[in-house]
Amino acid sequence: MGALADQRRGSILLEEATVLQQQTLSGGQHLLRLQAPGIAQKARSGQFVHLRCGPELALRRPFSLLQANPAAGWIEILYKDVGAGTRLLAEQQAGTCLSLLGPIGNSFRPSAERSRPLLIGGGVGLPPMVFLAGEMSSDWPEHQVLVLLGSEVAFPFTPQPSRLLLSDMPADVIAAMPLLEDRGVPSRLASNQDFPGCFQGHVTELAEHWLTALNEIELAKVEIYACGPGPMLKAAAALAHRFGVPSQLALEEYMACGVGGCAGCVVELAGPDGPEMKRVCVDGPVFEGSRVFPA
Image (tube, rainbow, N blue to C red):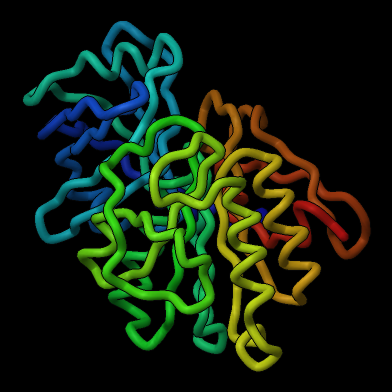
C-alpha cells in the first residue's frame, strides 16, 4: 500500500484555481465552482482537494469533490461555514485565484458484478456520493444505483418529490435530490428534523429498510459505498456485515499537509497480520469497511 500511496502523491497537481461562482445555500452551506482544468481532468469520486482558503491563511483545508467537469475544466466543492478557514473561503468572489492541490487520495472502485450499488451519504459526506452516482450513471449504465442522503440541517438543495418510483421504500418517503433526479438516478432523503417527504430517522435506518426488502439473489448484487460522520460509517459497516455484502467507506479526518508527510490523519485498520496504521490522505480516504470496523 505504501508504493501505491507514493504513486498517488506523485500525481498530485498544484494549480492556481479561479473562482467561477460562489453560492450561499441554506444551513450555512456554500457551493463553490473553481476553474481548475488539470484537476478536473484527473478527479475521481472519493478524492479530495487541499485548498488555501485565502492568501492570509497558511494552512490549507481538505474538501471532497461534489462534481468535476473535464470538458469545461471546472470542479465543485460543497462546504459548510464552520471555522476560520471556511468563513474566509465564503468571502471569496468570482475572479479570485486560490491555490489548490489535488486530486488527492484513492477513489471508489465500483464492481461489475455488484450491479445494485447502495450509496449512503450523511452531512459532509454527501458530495462524494453525488460524484460517485454521476460516475456510475455514465460508466455503468446497466447498474441500478440508489442514493440515500441524510442531514440534520437543511439540505443544500430544495428537495423535490421523486419521479423515479421505488417499490422497496416506504410510500411516504418521496423526497429526492434534483441533481440526481435529472440524471435518472433514484435518491431518497432521511432526517430527524421532520422535513417533508423525508424518512424520519437516520439514513442508515432507511438503508436497513431497503436491504431487508431484498431477496438473496438481489442482495448478492449489492455493495455499499458510504461517506459521512463516524457513527454513520460504523452503522453502514454493520449493515454490510449483517447482510453479507461488501462496503467501501470514505473517511473524513483533520489534515495538515494532505500529502502524507505529517501523519496527522493516521487511522488504525485491521490487517492480515494485525492492526495497521494508514494515512487517510494518501493511503485512503477510501477503505474497505471491514478493515475500518472489523466485525
